[in-house]
Length: 394
Image 1 (cartoon, rainbow, N blue to C red):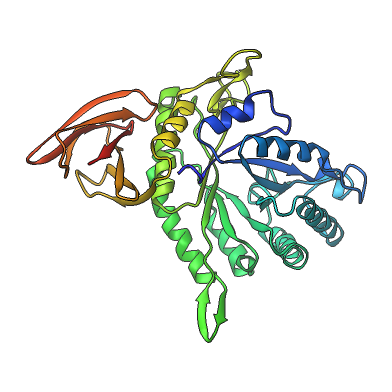
Image 2: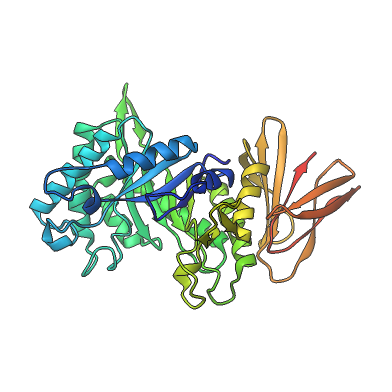
């Protein structure tokens, strides 16, 4: 923490102070479209200037980039997905040219965005078409830019049929990680079951190599590349969104997810009835001359608190206290331990866990004062709710 936290952005031209605000929230990564039609406006000629500027600004803010190689180009198939031999070859040449241009910058290159979704692979998603493209790009990366990291398939909503078809075709040979978009509408803790299933699937198809007569299975981590909650979904509001940011991030950390990317950085609009306008950590309007330059929502404060409180700590274990719906996660840095505690139960209640100190200062997930928790001979008694609380364990 916080090296594994990221956020999706939908721009290449940042407002003054915007990237600094992202970094100040504790994020280390941004995920953004690297569009084919924007960078190959003349057939066979590549212009990466707009992304050169963005990469310089990201570096200045201390942010790394996950760039999505995506979408069509009007020079090929009328802008549709690259599904013919000619368009696949053109897409692959462009992708390799981009990777060469930005080589050695520790970029994660992601092959497409939700190709299992008809919206992004029109008129109808086709895993076989995607697989052929992905194999061509994977082979080209290995031959031309072997040090660059390629991941995929950015599958929406844990589409296991799509994922297995990719693995079965041999794409794990070329990918450094598997990226998915869980998008659970309910409790984010339920993703643990999905991640377990995905790990087993990866293990089943992961390539095996022989090194000095010893067989080794390639280690392929999971990236949660896009997942958020709109604060106007039924039963949601900005406060609940902030709670779910913390719980989602903590759940991903506890399940060994190497990179957890929230969707979205800022609200896309102000229409109270449009869910797409309300995934952001900050409000839509840019506030020129003010600090902060965007109005933070509770989810922004949750991100900032999480990153600061657990900076440098790694997940150690979940304590079995209370019921199955109660989550007490322990994080460790050297001999120090910190705890995040909450419940998915509807009603707040008390739990008791082993502790030696007399009283403990609690911090709410959004940085507010959580009061004190007292310990006695039985241990430390903490009142938990759906809003996580943090404290240092002595």
